[in-house]
Amino acid sequence: MTNRVSWTKYPQPDGLPHYQELLEGTDWASLATPYGTAESLPAALARLLDPDPAVRTAAVKDVSNEVDHQNTVYEATVPVALYFAAILNHPATEVGDLDHDADVPSHHPTRALLLNRLGGTAYDADDEHIAMGECHFGEGFLEACPDMRAFRNMRPAIYSAVQPFLGHENAKVRDEALVAAIPLTEDPRLTTHRAELVGHARHLLTASTNRYHRDCALNALNAWGHDTGDLENANDIASRELQARLADFDYWLANYGTGSRTEDPPF
Image 1 (spheres, one colour):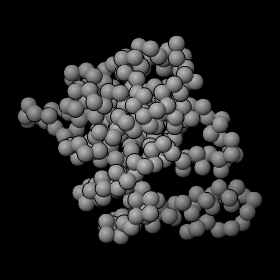
Image 2: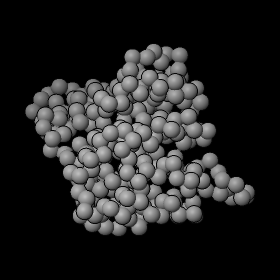
Image 3: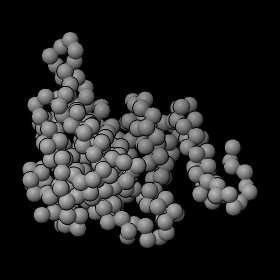
Image 4: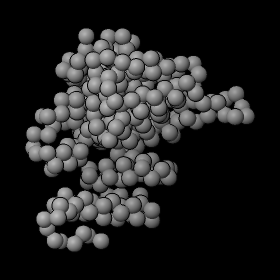
């Protein structure tokens, strides 16, 4: 019933379909994954709302293993991302694993895992990856990638699902929401939302020690023209310098590393 072209019927904020509509109304067997078709995905997606948190955690891993490969967006990626976004506010995703010695939820809700995967897909389809693709394959790279275009068209709808969790009481949820929101706001329809992300990014940098989260927040603030000198620590500076060296090496590899040039690498 559904194919990669029809996903563009949800281009606007608040245009997110209901998760049951996605699950039952998608012809999963017709959608490509890195390993074949998405025929087995509906069962795994349904388990994301299982009462058992261990089942939900395993389901996130199963779905991710099915569609994630080499930072590439596939046909099945779009409905999977929309399904993840559509169940973010479901009560089942709020509950985490149980602590070993107590009958109370820990601080690892399924919601944080879903936001993490949405953020990963958003970065896989961000402007930097488009630029890298154009560098290697020419300016028509995005036109040749209909599945990536389809995901990028969905960014406002996905952002509308992520946004409510930017101020969530659980630090893992709100940090994952911020990291997912940052690349989504590259969409021209969402750039005005960057202003609300600045405060959340600064708050993350005052509290989090997660290297990836800190790099995402710092890179975003710097790209948006904000001074981060008062937010950086020694590890942040070392990470920034390493990123610069790696970027220099990637540039050297792309331009001089084919054997046809003799310039030395930048180290």
